[in-house]
Image (cartoon, rainbow, N blue to C red; front, side, top):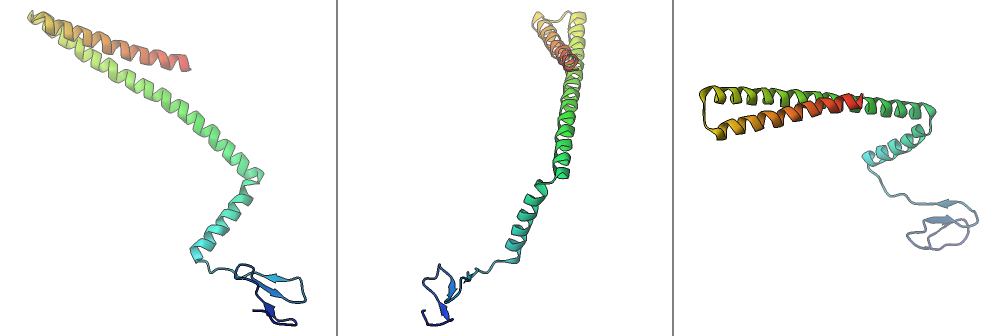
Length: 134
């Protein structure tokens, strides 16, 4: 729509509305939902907050705390699994002793011995790894 004077002139739907005789351009905005507007506002506010020193300090503290907790939880995991493996090795040792006292077959005796030795090694090596991390 083109008209003379200070009236509106639209060149295309994409260009928006121009006031003839002035440099002011008025763009038509598409209607946005309230949720979309809030999302845009939160994004802009988040960008502004990320520029502050306080946010940087809080993020650094969070990273340091998470790293420390991660090391401690890893150490705790090794200690717990070491204990479980040593407990299973003790059960295997008791089975070995029972088979030895009964004079049972060699197959069960060897199986119980290998089980006890293997799980004992897993438990001891787990505690050694904890000692190396300290």
